Amino acid sequence: MSKNASNLFSIILIVSLLAFTTKPNIDSQSNKSHPSETGIKVALLLDTSNSMDGLIDQAKAQLWEIINELSYAKYGVKNPDLHIALYEYGNDGLESSDGYIRQVLNFSNDLDLISEKLFSLTTNGGSEYCGQVIQASLDELKWGKKDQDLNLIFIAGNELFTQGKVFYKDATSNANEKNVTVNTIFCGEYQNGVSGKWKDAARQTGGDYLAIDHNQKQVYIVTPYDDIIIQLNTDLNRTYIRYGVQGFSKMQAQSVQDSNAAELDEVVVVKRAVSKSSRMYSNASWDLVDAAKDKSFKYEKINKKNLSKELQGKSTIELKKHVESQAKKRKMIQKQINELNIKRKKYTAEKQAEGKDENLEKAMISTIKKQAKAKNYSW
Image (cartoon, rainbow, N blue to C red; front, side, top):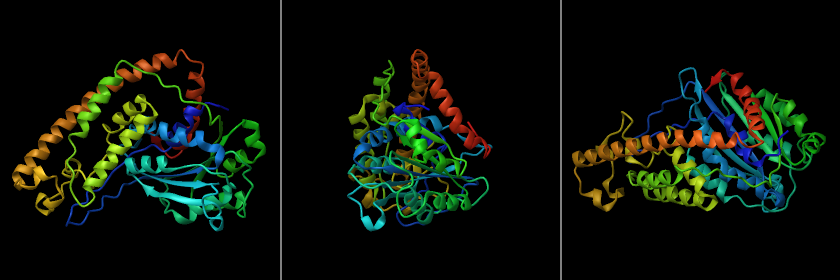
């Protein structure tokens, strides 16, 4: 199996068939629930012991590319809801009484928050209890109960799967009862993972076993369209109109995650910009442009004290016109980014065709998609 580290997060999230929907959170009005007919829930269980720095770096770098890859996911004619949870395990900085396990993020569909939590992870030597962290995620998270719900665990690490007080077969048996598929990613040689029971653990729930070289550095393909997309991302940010008690902090968080992407590579900024131009990146809880898309939205309910100073003096009609203007600008910018991304994808596909890993990558994606196909998901 592959030792291509750049595919780790692709492996994790391609199966997820990502589609985000966010409900508006108006200052003084209650939110209306719009439940999806289908749901996808994914728990990522990442080993954060000393040897796993490369694993965490991959997760940070690959997030946005995966979101883009999954933006076309369908269940029939519907775009399924998805929530992602994040756990870390095997870190000496965590409580020994908890099995060196911590829930970093409960199920969430907030892209910036997911990125923020990934960037918050640090490594420290520890004991890796795979069975126990799987059981913790089963006990603490609210999994989908419908037949069409896709419930997935992805656990990544490099030690024996048999460690800890919870035997992995007991945990996977419980996963079967909750209709949760456990997929394992061993960071090391394929046969070492097999002997360490990673493959057997995946087999217990019909999941996939994969082995990767978590220390292999990501190689990015730079395209002639990248600089233009990066500039358009800056223009895109100017279309956001903060509101609500969390408006300012959430807008700051958006900027921080742009900066985090830039620290990794300019290509990661490009991929994030494409994600921000997709249907999945919705910020209705703090951005008026996204919030106003909901039919239940009422401008009269906004507490203007939480708006920027230049907007606080505007009448409701003036504010609505401003939001509509920014919405048009955003739609145009996103259209430009997506058009450039089509050209960018064609360019990168041609370059990747020259590399030795093309067939392997296609094989990996095909392997992962079979889990979704079994639940009648498609692209």
